[in-house]
Length: 132
Image 1 (cartoon, rainbow, N blue to C red):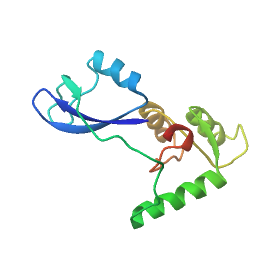
Image 2: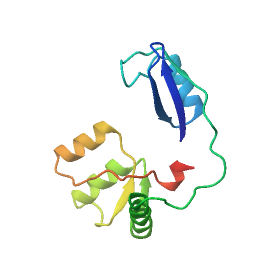
Image 3: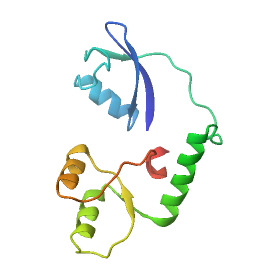
């Protein structure tokens, strides 16, 4: 993932997270990056300081709790990546053994799972394979 500082043609500044630099370029070229303030699709990257070095130790109590949650999830659950919706549904329907899992799903997949009574919840962190 990469974070960019962005600005629309009206001067509104905001941040955006993208899978890669190429992903941002493709989305921006297709006018699919919108200003979070006014909705303009005339958006440009702005200057920002690069992130240097590794991750630092959590600073706040919230960051410490999120780090502890990450350790627990990674130790006790199976990472299923983009197959999360299919795996969660199969577990819910009894097609595969019940086990804790985590991964990624898009908004439509999550909406369908919730509509069908499959218990899911977002995690406050990206899996390490996606965060690097």
